[in-house]
Length: 160
Image (tube, rainbow, N blue to C red; front, side, top):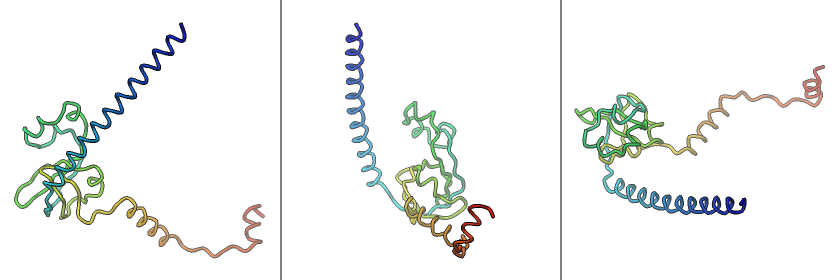
């Protein structure tokens, strides 16, 4: 009896694992295909960033045709939206998450766009470069302390 239950559960786990593997490979292929399409249609423009926020696509000022193409689950999720001024036209665009974090508000920047999707910003620093920059700032702001002598270390340690 117990062996039957263990056997059934292990079979279910195996089937679930195989299904997740194939779904993951399918999603990877689809993502690669979309990234290739974005790379083909990418162009650099200079824009003025008015505002940025995370909101649902249904609340955004996006074209109806674009909102209709989004899957049902995607309509419920909050996405990074950026309101930009391209020439005389003001538009709301969807942004990539990493780019959204570094975009400055109320500034003119050069960005790469593909349709109504902001891919990247020119001059954007990677996470590693930002971490190095923070470390160097911390080192420059911390005052250098003179090394303590052995008897001062003992006093500090034992409180005498």
